[in-house]
Length: 131
Image 1 (tube, rainbow, N blue to C red):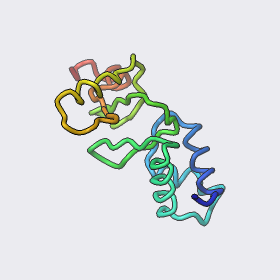
Image 2 (image 1 turned 135 degrees about the vertical axis):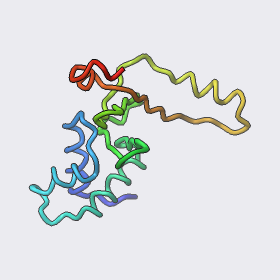
Image 3 (image 1 turned 90 degrees about the vertical axis):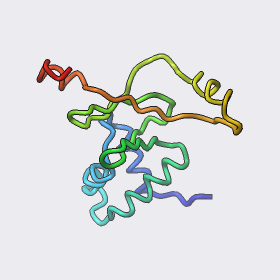
């Protein structure tokens, strides 16, 4: 049983109000006003716990810090190669890839993580020569 934490609740509430998939440091800066004595280590620890519990999503971009999403429902993300913005990618479910992967894998495939990348609409508007 995990002990209840007001700080963890605050972190989860902060994430639920965001759609920009903030980093741990952004979360830390965002809740310091309410919890001025909270440490960055506490924020990291609680983000990891919330992610492990399935309450939030951790998005590892491969270049730069992990990002966090308060929406724990299965959905896909897009990473802009130019500005580093991470955003939700609205699309039909591709859950069938688990079955495809399972056909040739001797273990049990229970899920997947896919991070799409390219150039976001904002960067395209700034410079149409990016393609």
